Image (tube, rainbow, N blue to C red; front, side, top):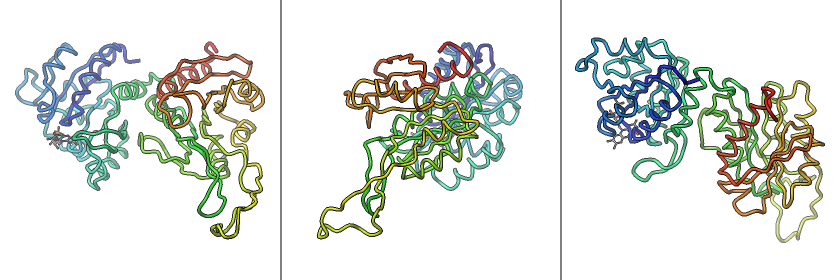
Length: 396
Ligand SMILES: Cc1cc2nc3c(=O)[nH]c(=O)nc-3n(C[C@H](O)[C@H](O)[C@H](O)COP(=O)(O)O)c2cc1C
């Protein structure tokens, strides 16, 4: 969808500006015609010559000193889409309030094209009430915000405020231009391991970290989907995700079942307990009273409940196996899923808590596709490619 499209890439003054050169290159590789507008501060972080060499045209850096008579209106009217990466707190604030005193914000205001913003800043700046107000205004104006994610920031700090990776921003631009098969698709994802109370302090749990479900949710957002994440684990990633925090299998079942009918695709990546203590103690169990006899009862089957619902979404189940995936093949057949992702959690680099995973895709007709060891984000990307093929009737 990017081929032949006219993209204005705005670069403002943050350290992440160095990644914008790569974004410019990826846009050009995708066939877009790219024009760059830089703020005066951005020039401290990356040279205009870099963008000239990548796009073939010198960036606009000033309203009055370049060759164009009216650079902001020319570019604003020319653009099919405007993307600003990194978008600093200052630039975001000027856009929100219409303060068009520089070439970039003037271009934004002189354009009717959709605007994609990739904020980047330190956590304190991102969380400041002034930035919160700015973002509320920008979202109310209908602009598209991608990220920020969390991770390493400048000056060795770590936290929320890290600019989304260039390929995520590229996917968001593509989706805004209507190019992604996932644009506007409503996705429901579960993540993490459920906790079943024994008493108010202790629980029966499992080792799931939620990382696989998080990667699936973030990749879906990057592709333009509208994502709800029902999770037991803390999610600090892409703020484009609607997060529903739950604890037990019962909570998760209720949250998922209430949202299943309004979802197009459901990915059940959480590790849900099969059994829970039948009668959890109301007060903390004491050592002096001796070990409690724990009677267990089955929990609600979240996956089966979605499969059995009227108007059910395209359904993806996950199976954590501790050996060959024969049990998973049986699960794919019996659970009524459209696709099952099985992984052997005992294998090195695969399963709980790792950043990589080796999975096997199993279809209800018994087709088995072993995938190589990949990062969880790569598994997520392949999975969404596979789902897009299946939902549009492509090869399966
Ligand atoms: C080393 C350094 C790094 C900075 N990084 C950021 C940043 O990542 N995000 C941000 O909002 N501001 C950052 N700033 C502050 C902006 O550069 C400053 O607010 C500037 O006025 C932004 O102008 P602009 O939005 O017109 O580009 C940084 C400043 C310095 C000195």
